[in-house]
Length: 387
Image 1 (cartoon, rainbow, N blue to C red):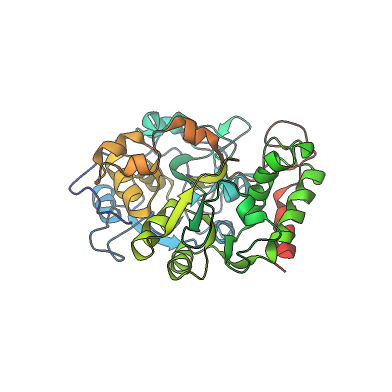
Image 2: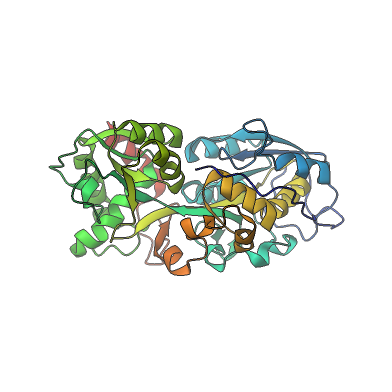
């Protein structure tokens, strides 16, 4: 469930001088700055709900106001409800930065919407888990485009009073003759095609799938075909975690993909709910703070990235949102102390087992060639799958 944040923590910010990138909204930043100057007095960001709380949702959840007081950067937050919406919002050029998931971050890089970042300007970067750095979803061509924020796995959740025996495989949601037809759920986004590919990696070894985000046409077609079969068993797709929580609580949905936060929130109202990390592994998300290539307030954005990755603030965000913090030093500050154990924040083996969302490209992310199905085709296929 959402947990009270650690109170009273303040964090020292960068004391760097001389602006390293311009504030002209008509120019596009293609290089990372080498210094950060004084804040421009404002910051406009696109963020997932719960990532930039100012006390308006819950008076006990406020880490935006202390940032404003320390920097003079007045923060305006636009909530992005889906990765596609975030991509569209960033395309407007009206925002300084975004908390992008892997299914939109590379799209933003390829579209020139975000600028390279100088990680040396982020004092907390050295403490961030190495597993989250320099990945295919926050870097490109050896250039870093973002600062890791937090992460989590996509679990299989089920109602143990209805679903028997207890599932240990994603086969439970892909079986054509499922006895739970109409009560199965799946994440509503093109990136969910990767979940089918991950399952087929084990279920169909003849397809020789190595990376669920680097699919040949044959592999992609097999994943799409599986999802078309699954479609008849889906009661509802979800993108809003509150709606998914309610469906599991009420029993209208008894089986499907979930996040840890959904389970945490739903369990008090339905004690029969359980989660499992299936034997095939799972996909997951690792979010990245990225700077707009047309940022009007780049200095404030760098200050924000440093602030939001500090241990004290990471502890607040992780406990409120329900995720593993990118900075493990936050674990010693979170109440209750078992938070990081629940979210496996320091379990390197678990993190390595997750296929974190990444934006598919024609040039395969796994380095296997240039014949992979690009994300534009994933988007088209998802529309067809859902009907």
